[in-house]
Amino acid sequence: MPWECAAYKFMMASPEDVSGLESLIEQGDLAADEVLCIIAKTEGNGRVNDFSRPLAHRAFRDCLAAHTGWTGAQVDDRVMFCMSGGCEGVITPHATVFTRRQANAISGKGEPRLTLGISFTRDLLPEELGTVVQVELVSEAVRSALANAEITNLDDVHYVQVKCPLLTSDRIAEARARNERTVTEDTLRSMGYSNGSSALGIALGLGELSGPIDPASICTDPDLYTNLGGSSSGIELMRCQVLVVGNVEGAASVYVSGHHILTDLIDADGVRAALRSVGVTVEGTVSDAQRDRIVNVFGKGQVSLDGRVRGHRSTLLTDSDLNTRPARAVLGAVIASVVGDPAIYASAGWGYHQGPAGGGMVAVIAKV
Image (tube, rainbow, N blue to C red; front, side, top):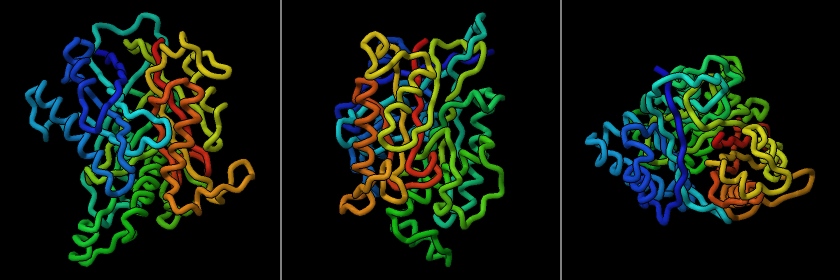
């Protein structure tokens, strides 16, 4: 029996605000046991000590547990939670809920429509984070998520989101107590290693790169990357979680997904191209009528490794403020200016393997 996939967006007044999800359930728009994934932009600092992420995760998990009768552990076994910290600039804290239910019949038109799939790795050991072990585990999970989404043609993939762990002082100490060494003892840099390894796992799992991956290339070789997704690390887990978004012919959905590459953090034309890939007409800013079709836009961007944007010097790599925060503000403002809506997903900063060096990608989910 075919799947019917959908996506809904709602605003959040605080990291623990799940009233939007409660309303969708109470109004009958979705059933709690149909929730496959929740991606939220929370208003913390996006760094190692961003506790807005686990707070939001717990609130959403407990909400679903209350409506399904599942335990919190059972919810975590069935639902992917990607809480992404940092709403700098104009980004509005919000969440996107992805659902999947069994459909009564395959769409008669046979046109490509939204499909979703998720998969989880096992828990990583601290010393495995940022290594080839993480790359391979994520690549296996990507392939599993593809099968879960019933995608057989990789051209039908438009977005892959990974939620992955990072290192804390306690996790580093635990590895050291077993005479194991972690890839870094800088907890902040561990975010980059985890995100980079996960991105290589995406590329490997989708066949964008062929293995094996040289361990020395992780977060050092900018020529190795995925064009189809990104990753977000956090303290609230030790495994990697994967969401695959695509389109398949005959899917019983009224939604469609698309994407486009970003050449840099100010590539507004790349955002417009992503919108056009789902049939949203746009020249400057999206019109009110067309905006009603857009569920959400997901952007991933990287700070150029030479610190330049279109040949001009920037301070993103030298400013005292960690580059992830101003970079998110820049990318968020560029996407919001095109969409005409600040409630968009933007993730950016120092990183490797998530799009071409200094660039990234944008994915869109819209109503047909």
